[in-house]
Each structure stands twice: as structure tokens, then as C-alpha cells.
Length: 152
Image 1 (cartoon, rainbow, N blue to C red):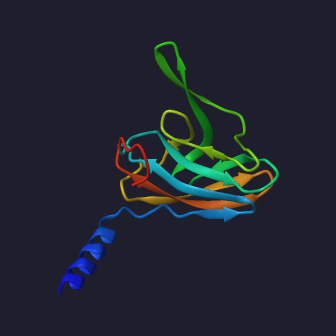
Image 2 (tube, helix red, strand yellow; image 1 turned 180 degrees about the vertical axis):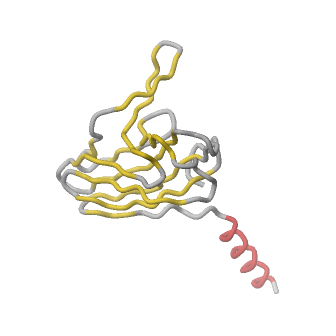
């Protein structure tokens, strides 16, 4: 009886954990934990966060981004300017050889411009990322709750 209760508790705990975001691989790169925050339906902008790991001996860089939920997507960075946080478009983002590029709230991220209806919790959409060396890959993005600080 005790082993049945233990097995039930383990199964319940596993079901209660949030689903891990899918890892996608292309060439020497792996793209992990792609997520976005929910927005209001009339929002014109949103953001995608993810981590790209480069297991190769050569650096790579993002040369293009596309998402069907937005008119266009671009790399952005949040920087402190005195007492004000400012976002600005960056140039192509690099992924160092043997290193990682981490995109998170308050830092580097992918800005979705001209959203087509906002982002809803539980929604998912593909983000097409084109790398200079590794080619093009579709990365599934999962939308979490508004104000989330990480994938859910």
C-alpha cells in the first residue's frame, strides 16, 4: 500500500510540473527555453526570450528573425540610462564559440513589432531564426502569463 501511495505522489508531482520548453538543434547550436509574456489583445509589441548554446569551434550570429504573430521581429537590448531603462535595436546578435547567448527580461531579447492580436497565455507560435553558419530553424515559442520572469 505504501508503494502505491508513493507512486501516486510521484505521478501527481510530475503532472504538476510545468512543461519544459522544447530544445531545437541546428548545426552546433541548440536553442532552449523559448518563451514570451502574454500581452493585452491590443498590444503592438511583445518580446521573446531564449538561450542559444554553441557547442562548436566557430562563432555564429543571427542574421534574420520572423514570427507569424508579428509584422517583424528584431534583436533588442534594454540598457540603463541614468534612472531610465531604454530599449534599442541591436545589430546582429553573436553566439560565441563554446559559449551561449542568453536572452531574458531586462536584457537582450527579440522584439516582436506590429503584433497581430496580442499574445495569449498558453498560445504557441514558431519563431524562425536564420543563423549565418547554422542556417534557418523554426523554434517553438510558448506564451506564459503577463509579467512572467521565465518560461512556465
